[in-house]
Image (tube, rainbow, N blue to C red; front, side, top):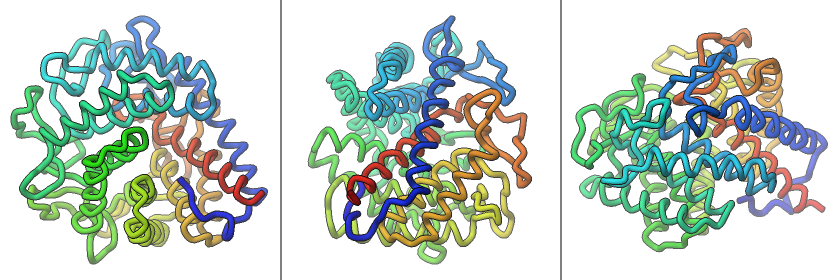
Length: 412
């Protein structure tokens, strides 16, 4: 949602060019996923394609990957009305219901094998959140009431099973029957603490999407509380960055800065505030969003305009990850909408040029996971996998297309 454009924005040829190029790349990206990524033998989508395009027909499949695919094709169909994308969304919707939905306990399990049989039934709050994101988007695109019912069910699960009534916020994980679990980590690289910035960001995001189609008072209050949690518990009062991991009482347990999450969170917080249409909250969140973007640009940009991955102490992870660059485009565009400074626009265009020149795989399709400081892809990273999906890059392209279209309409 973009507001108050007419008096402050003009449409430039650079933005029009960006919109055309984003549309072309979105078509190319979704063509890869609707052809190369399909699992023609076992149904749904493959679990892995390596960096050179080789398909692993025996790879496991994760709830996050599959939910993000459903969100992607649902959103693409809603925006473009391309029937091919609806066909993909319909296919993926049925696959998730048939293979990831826990018929006994409810909710989404974590992982299935290549045949679709459950192999890890743990319940991550993060996965339930992405289920809400996908089911609510599928409902927005197709008016399928059953999908909205699934989204509401997952919302109630998060509130009844994962919400911390003592300290607020949501715990990371539970067993399949909702009993406690010792290892709460989302992935092997994460710290084993009961709360994280990442999970809360990706609960706020689906809650906002669900609220667009279900104006429930309790859901609105949950969104308001989540925005308060970010403002008062997750954002570090000294540095202005997101802290990443927490104890139950919100004691900070990490020191690293994730530039991608900072700039992604900036626009997602702003989006959630706009969805609930509270002017006071919007103004406060806009200040936070711009500050997060400014800090990211100040500390995280390389000389070529691309964004480093992380900063831990004084040590930079200088790789340029696909999702970080994608989120930076939207974050800078959103900052430009809030405060139309030329440097935001210039920064967004520079990152887009970096993506075109280094991250898009012109030979095998999709985007490389990451490139090094010389812009060379790291071949061992997979192209499609448990954490590599079309969600970040396709969403960035769709956000840019829609936002530029709104600016163009407002300036006519």
